[in-house]
Amino acid sequence: MLVRPRPKDIEQGGGRGQPASPAGRGQQRVPLSYFEGSMPIPAGWDHAPGAYLAFGDTYAEDRAAATRRGWPVVTFEHGRHLHMLLEPEEVASQMLSLMAAAGVP
Image (cartoon, rainbow, N blue to C red; front, side, top):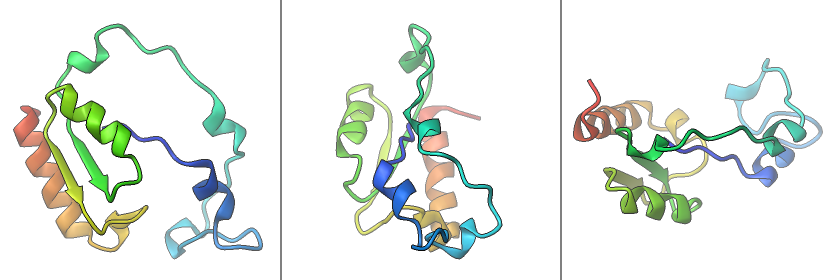
């Protein structure tokens, strides 16, 4: 799965230095520069089994890239960032289905 946080999601939080949701309470804050870093990507990484679970259209380009790679793709049309906190059973079920479709044991 490809995951790329948007800077505005990181910066906005819940205001006044508070996390955007109760799930973030008690978690160590990470500086924005952490997400601006990069690391080398090994050649052929995208030929390994993969799948993409999207929460809405926020990362439509990444979802399209997953489709071009032939990966199974599922989209929660009305999903939002951290949607797994709202519907954990449904998200887990979709993840298991995607893993099976991708051939991941």
